[in-house]
Image (cartoon, rainbow, N blue to C red):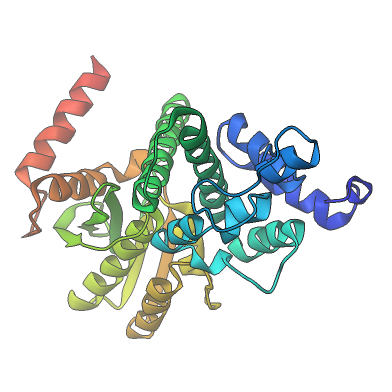
Amino acid sequence: MNPSNYLQTDTKIFYRKLWSLYMPSKIKIIVWKISWNYMPTFSNLKLRRVMAEDRCVRCCQGEEDTNHVFRLCPITKEIWNQLNFNWVLNNSIPDLWNWFTWVFNQGTNEQYNFFFCCGLWLIWANRNKLIYEGKSSTSQDISKQIISYISELEGIKNKELILEANARPKQYIQRVNVAIYFNAAFDSQNFRSASGLVVKDEGGRTIATKSILHVNVASPFAAEAHAGFQATKLGINMDFYILDILGDSKTIITKCQNANRDRSTIGAILSDIQSLKPHFQEISFYFIPRLENTEAHRLAKEALKNGEEQYLEGGTLRSVRGEMEQNRLGSSS
C-alpha cells in the first residue's frame, strides 16, 4: 500500500476495524505489517540484497512475496479451504491492499475478520517454524491450530464477560413467551460439535432439554449456527407458535435477526433458519450473556464429552443439574 493513501476513508475504516478486534496486539501488528508489505518475505529481503534466492520453501513453486505467502501458495489455499474460508481466495483482486479491504468488507462482522487475522498470524508463524526450526506442519495441522487458538481466545473473552457480569447488579427479566436457550460445544481436533437446548415456559421453569451431536463442523461459529437451527426446529416440533430463542453468540443472534441473505461461511445454515420462520406466528432471537445460558452450555459440553445425544421432558438432566449446583455452591462459598 502507498503510505500517501493513509488518510483515505477506506484505509481509516480498515484500521478502525482491525484495532477494535478482540485479540492480542501481536496479531494486530502482524496484520498491520502484512497490509503495508513490511513482512520479511524472501522477495522483500532479495530487494534489499539480504539474500539471493526468493523461492517459497513450502511449495518451491513461486516467488515468496506477501501475496504468495497468504494467498497464492498451494499450502495456504488448502488452509483457507479447510477452514471453509475459501471465499477469501478471490483471484480477481491481484493487489494485496485491495484484497485486505475487500475481505474485511465481505466478512461483514468482527467475528469473521477476527478469524481471518488469526489465520494470517498462524500461517506466518508456521512459515517461520519451517525456516528457522525445520518444523514442517501440514495444512490440516495449521487449520486445527487456527481453530484451537480461536477457541482459546473465545474462552478467555467469555470468562472476562462473566466476571464483568458478576460485578454488575443482577437484573432478572420476566419473559412473557416460551423460550428455547441454545449453546454449542466445539471439538477443534475432530471438527465435531454438540448443541445444547433448554426449553423454558413463561415462568422460567424448564420443560424440556435436548442435546444433538454434529460432525464435519468447520468452526465455533458454525457450531453455534447449528445450535440455533436445532433450537428453531425444536420449537416447530413442540408446536410453539410464539417463541423466543436465546443464545450467547452475539454474531449468530444478530444474523438470525437479519432477514437479508448472509454471504459468510455459515450462510447456508442461516438460510435454513430463515426458512423455518414462517412456521411461527411470532419468533424472536435475543442475545444473552453466557452467565445466563449455563444450562444449555453444560448440556452441549456433556454431550460432546460423552458422545451421546439426550432428550428429556419435564426437567434438566441429573448430571447437568448436579454440576450446576456444585458450581453455584462453589461460587457462593
